[in-house]
Length: 99
Image (cartoon, rainbow, N blue to C red; front, side, top):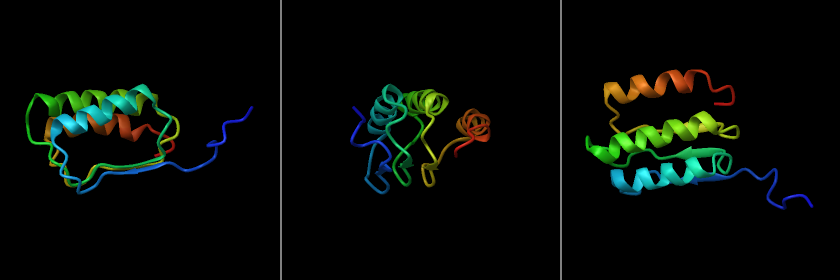
C-alpha cells in the first residue's frame, strides 16, 4: 500500500531555537539516518561556536546532504560557519541538483 505521507512536503524549521552545537549534531545525525524525510530544512541562527560538536555536526550534515534526494531548501544562515567548514560544505552543495 502507498505511504499516506507520500507527496506531502515536510518542513523542519528550527531557526532561532537556541540550539547548542550538540543539539545540532544530534539533529544532523538523525537526518543522516533518514536522509529523505525532510524537504525544507532551516537551522539558521543557532549556536555553532567552534568546538568538537561543531565539527561532528558538519561531518553528519555532509553525510546527510550526500544521501538526501528530497531536500530542496537549506538555510544555515547565522550559524557563523568557519572558513574550513564552508570549504567542506560548498562542494557538496554545488552539486546537489534539487537544492
